[in-house]
Image 1 (cartoon, rainbow, N blue to C red):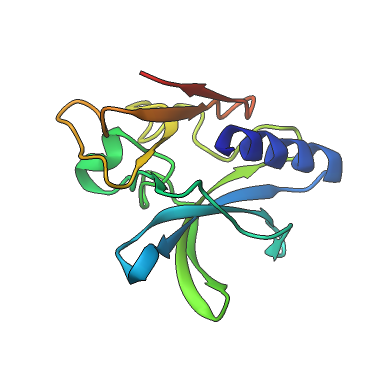
Image 2 (cartoon, helix red, strand yellow):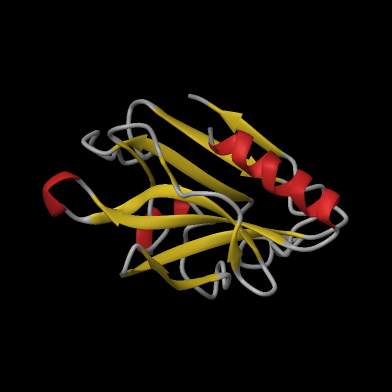
Amino acid sequence: MVVGKLENARNLALARTEPVELRFVKLPGEGGVSEEYRAIQLFRANPPEPLGTIQRLPTGMIAVDGAGAAKAYSTITAPAPVNPLGGDMLLQGATRSYRAVRFLPDGSTTLDALGAENGADRWFISLKFENAPAKTDRPADNFVTVVVDPITGRATAYRP
């Protein structure tokens, strides 16, 4: 689903000849439990305008928050300065945080071509089951990592 939406955002930017974002949105879980990256939405970049409805990740799945030590598992959802593209958006009457990948009309992204933090890492996002405990060397026993090439805008999924 995530790879498909990244490709969709890239293709829309090419077809519309304007920047398009794929936003990873933090939402509370069932019963109002902690906010995690549980949804994605395509956006026109300038002016910001939704391109379709928000889509929740499959039940129980989250994109790993790239803050702090978890940055090793998700640079796309890491806060600035790692990924400066993000902020807050109004969604169904509530303010929600998001991080984004912006695709340009030539299919490339605005992600630093040297990688996150100027070459320290590639641009990627890891997804896992919310209840799966993190391991010392990976986000969980069963996870998937999606890598985005900042120059071509192509996304590839990897599983352990």
